[in-house]
Amino acid sequence: MPVTALHHFTIRCTPDELPPLLDFYTRVMRLTAGARPEIPAPGAWLYADGQPIVHLYAHLSTPDEPVNLATGHLDHISFRSRGIVEMREHLRAMDVPFAEAPIPGWAIQQLFLHDPRGLKIEMTFWMDQEEQGGAA
Picture 1 (cartoon, rainbow, N blue to C red):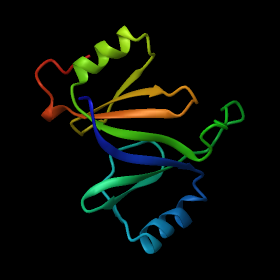
Picture 2 (tube, rainbow, N blue to C red; picture 1 turned 30 degrees about the vertical axis):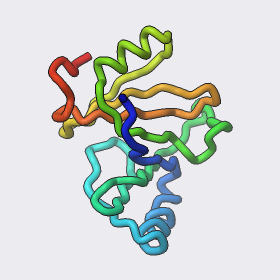
Picture 3 (spheres, rainbow, N blue to C red; picture 1 turned 60 degrees about the horizontal axis):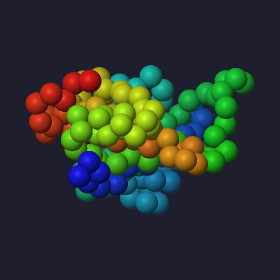
Picture 4 (cartoon, helix red, strand yellow; picture 1 turned 90 degrees about the vertical axis):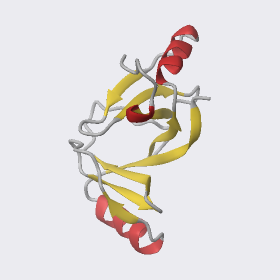
């Protein structure tokens, strides 16, 4: 089974909104800011019991960047997954468009797709736990 758990959700915000969001999730919700890969936009990963369950992603919108009215501030939902080779084959067979993104410096590969409502779905695969042949 490719999806094994809900992994995290990502909230999109502006750089000015980042400090109050970080304060809320750390002070009110008692999550802990922790390790985050080198991502070219400000943000934070907030952990509960050693797991990064809330990601804050701050960036400046550009006038030509469309606002996703279906998802608002929610950028995407991530599912912990396994069996990346099988999932690629399945998505291709279903004719579902997807994109891949490795996390630099981390043994993580992501597949991104969209649900029928336009919500971005991330499937997160830990490559050190994948069977041989995990490369695209």
